[in-house]
Length: 124
Image 1 (cartoon, one colour):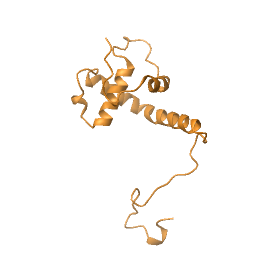
Image 2 (cartoon, rainbow, N blue to C red):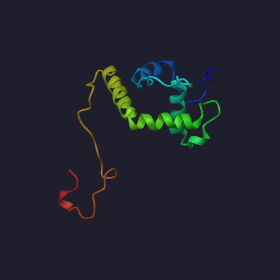
Image 3 (cartoon, helix red, strand yellow):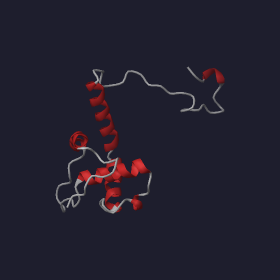
Image 4 (spheres, one colour):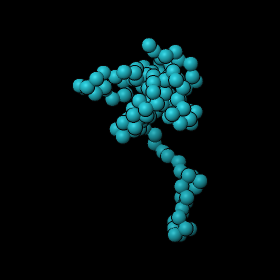
């Protein structure tokens, strides 16, 4: 039985249509997946959005161990980075921009120079 979407972090149907094809296919062989992937993704987004621990996932999500297993496996496969890159490209193209950004900004609060780096070589 599928859970009812009720949290602000849950994906909309339109968002799920964008995300689903970017996820790796289920493994071949072995037993079939017990929990729908959308519920797993919604649970991961819930943890990210709320900052709760895995063990504090509400009971209407799949078990926290399952959700964490998917999260760890997908992080190891760099799925999150590929997903963010693909979604960023789609948003930029929809705005009539190039798929890839042409500039990046790093300010002094983001990257601090070490004490051993001379003042003349810091900054722009």
